[in-house]
Image (cartoon, rainbow, N blue to C red; front, top):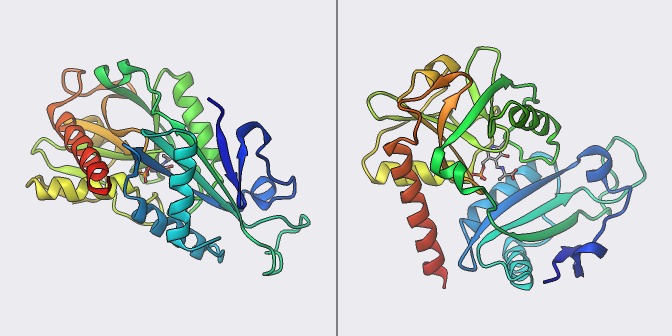
Length: 289
Ligand code: PDD
């Protein structure tokens, strides 16, 4: 089946979809993005994603290219045209096309909006059955990781280093020895008392939508959640660990560097949280059907 992309008001065949070489996203990484899960045709937490998009744009003094409700229509339509019932939609807003010059271009330059959709997530089943390994690496990113910017080169580099080291994800560690987050996921541990621990939302991490939702689900189920920084050493001594993201949902971590957690198998706490999150996704789809 041929794929379709939305580019600045038009639905185009994927191979013909392109943006100008002087798009500021291409030249300066001057843009932001969102990845939204699609479950049974529904956008999962679509409103929260669009709120976060607006926040990212505000922080960069950029305009929303259209109203959130119009944007939701484009997202759903892109999913529909690609026959994506279960997968993701990707959206990217850049500051638009202008002669290369560092300051913002005149206000008349319109932001560019690109949306694509993909079935998935395409993950080897072994990753889920066996749990994942993570590799710790220094966090070399900037001080505004709360903005979901397309400027992802440090994230790409640590992910690549992790993969070359035989790990699925990289956990980035700040100068104080505290874990910030994964290259494209939030990081969590479960301590010996069963409390979930994840870094609080501030500039050092992205305010993950999956993270946010899981905190709500866990608290509603009576599970204690502490939003506080944790060190790499603490993580290695934890009972369990896991990652969250739109594309991973909840994935158990069984090894951090050379430290194997528990018996080296996905822990019951992480698996329970994963099941809770998948239930919520199924319910979210049913609620909007
Ligand atoms: N990544 N931290 C970072 C640095 C991320 O890039 C992401 C998402 C997350 C998790 O956020 P959420 O739960 O809202 O997906 C945390 C997306 C999926 C990506 O870049 O593909």
